[in-house]
Image (tube, rainbow, N blue to C red):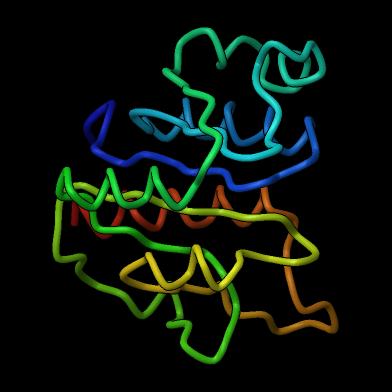
Length: 158
């Protein structure tokens, strides 16, 4: 497998510094090329993120962005295929996807309770979900990201 792949991560209004730190650490391990911290998502300037990220925030490029929807439009113009990780009636099972129509992917994640807004979802090309078999209906956002980012690597490199 290659060290870096053309996947950017867009975090939309994720409040928890611990989740953001864990996402940085996993993103670095998976070879993500960039992280965009949108809305109220905290940045690595917060020491709590560094505690969980264990230094990954120093090696992985990141950018603080005010408006997620504007970033999504910019990435679309740059040729990114945008995928939201969100449950819903329009969501496809992430494990059933065998091919993505682009080698440039933007993976969008949102807050755990409210999820991504319709304003954001309508700007993504696909909505993917991780199937749930237990009593709980969702996973922690950092855990879900870990599953999704490695599934995207598998799709792109197999």
